[in-house]
Length: 102
Image (tube, rainbow, N blue to C red; front, side):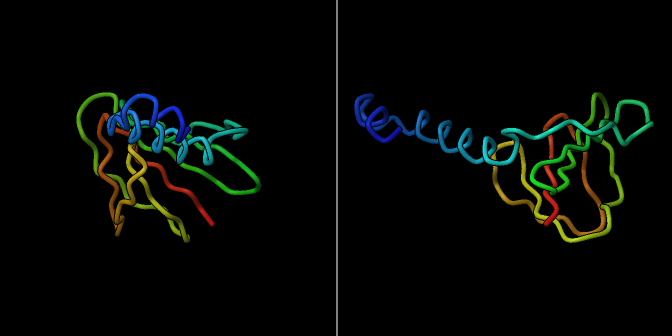
């Protein structure tokens, strides 16, 4: 990866894209879809499993939704792999939020 970035002149956009892919490949590579958790219209909450850890993905197919955060210890990330501070509510938009439970 480093040699590819160097050959392309150290392109920061490519570098950031590769870092994002690297972060999420660790989370989703070999993960298994378990079920859709939400029955609410235009709200998607998908559950995945990897190495015994639960991963929830929240997003909206329409209007933004405010959803109560689940119980338990988890780390939250936006679609770019940046940590997100989740307190009591998750704002579900067209950009997914990923919760990775410990």
